[in-house]
Length: 353
Image (tube, rainbow, N blue to C red; front, side, top):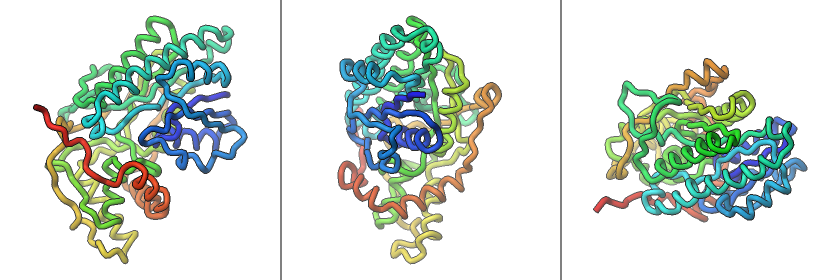
């Protein structure tokens, strides 16, 4: 099996690459533009494998991607290349449209041309798995849990760009027959997550004695999915789902942001008892909310469990403990990431006119 992973130097993509090299016999090509959050340190543990290769390329570069497919001849493509941070999308929405929407359409066109030239047997086995987000469903009421049939209702430039990419993937399957599968996962967390998202940012700011910012009331609720569970789900779906299908992937761990931050502070108090910043909860600071901040995200993953037999295994408390411990033990990794791109400053402060 030859597997192409776009965005394989990012958070979720690198977790997938590490899993493929570490536990399967697959040959893996990691294609990443290394813009913003892409970091080759995320795949350093597997970079010397004879079954791993890396190419720096932009999914929006049709000629480069056509060359990649022609030379590598993948049996499967996991498409994770994307701009992903909501706050950053508020500051620079066009970059998200360019990568997430236009880049995905470009990749689909290149993949369609490649797929049509395969032998009948190879065409039958080929899959393109498009990894999307539950952000496309927008803010939901406490009684709601989106399913695969829920209409898109995006509220941020990031969510809108991902919704656009989803529509392109569906169109390429329905119009051209390209065997695609779409997934929508809830909020991911875990090791190697770029330190601009809620959990790693709170961990690192608390470790350094900086303010741990909580947007607005802090009552916004998210369903938290450990990245290792997400990778498990993606591999299971790629192997068992039918082309043209979509699947939501939940962590079954809904938590309010204020409770997540409180849990992080509690774990740090236990793991770093000598800290001069203990109790870390004293660092929590309420700040103005993000423009258009969704109040609640969650999904109903009953179909994934019933049809494909997959459910998450890592509970939030266990996953958070592992995550905090990893950041404590890997200071060199996150110091490099902060120095290079993001030192914890507030993003997404744009206001509507």
